[in-house]
Amino acid sequence: MDNAFKYHSDDHCEILLFEKYLIKQVKEGQTIIPDHAAKLKIEVDKQYNGKPFVYISNRIHSYSVDPLTYRAAEIMPNLMGIAIVTTEDKSKHAAYESIFFKKPFKIFDDLKKAIAWVDKVLENEIKLSDRI
Image 1 (tube, rainbow, N blue to C red):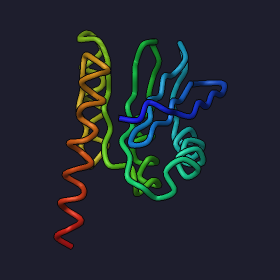
Image 2 (image 1 turned 90 degrees about the horizontal axis):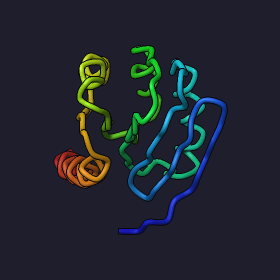
Image 3 (image 1 turned 45 degrees about the horizontal axis):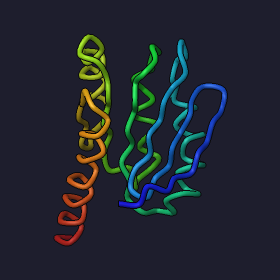
Image 4 (image 1 turned 30 degrees about the horizontal axis):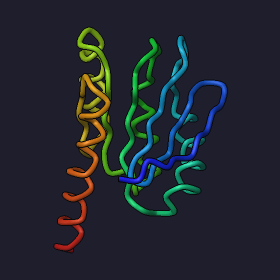
């Protein structure tokens, strides 16, 4: 596994962009809105150039997510799945968010488990695209 990554930061988050996935850490007290998905798409296009990837939300801080942001994320057709890393007490909110995203969506309590899930999602995508 290649551990090289690109780093991006702005007023609401930090993003680590790896070969097959990105890890986004939102800053304390922020509200994630659909416009943030459009901004993320710029970084995604630079890094992945149409290649499939998985988004990992590492929820180390407390913040809010407008559920419509998941609809806006559909502007990234190469986004194959979303992993949420969070504590048990916050997992109910993440489970609610899953109804707004039509691709694989899973909640983890450990970042390493979420990263391991990336390969499963991408392997499944390759199998599906072979059938077409």
